[in-house]
Image 1 (spheres, helix red, strand yellow):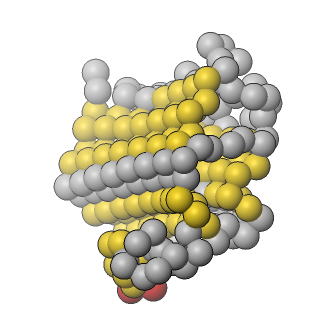
Image 2: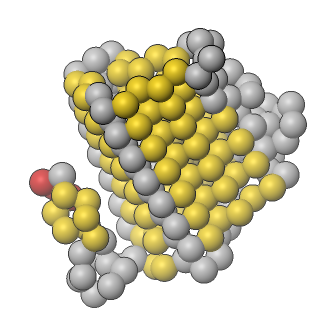
Image 3: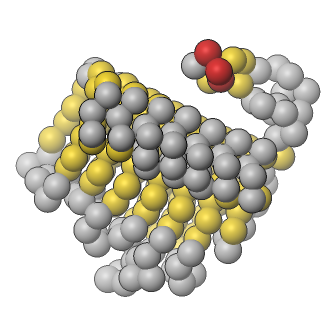
Length: 196
């Protein structure tokens, strides 16, 4: 049975959502802010039209092998560690989303056993990966069996935009692409170099 969380706000929790071997979880139009961890998941997770902001630790972290991650039209911003830390999963799809200003990597794949069951599929498209302290996307694991990274807006990531993985058709951002990120406004700006 799938569990759906819609139109919720979670603030200042140790872990806002801890999905521990319960059921596939879909989170829609939900705002998570100021928690130590935004979402810890061990079953398939879909994050749609949602915001995770200001977690002191990792904003989204995986657990058990076989968990799949889908992120669509969501903001993962301003975290005290990585935006998304993938420790064990087989399928990751991130589209039309923003991963920015996290104190670690924007997206990091960390486990040597990642994808060991069926191989790892990584799909990242039409997303903004900007201003993260370390890499925008780093792959510290054996090469995935299927990788498609394309059409992303990238720049301002402290260690580089990509590590051990490449993307095609990207827009290089030489200025912040957001209207007023310090005020929480991540709408796109018309500033030259910011994707205009």
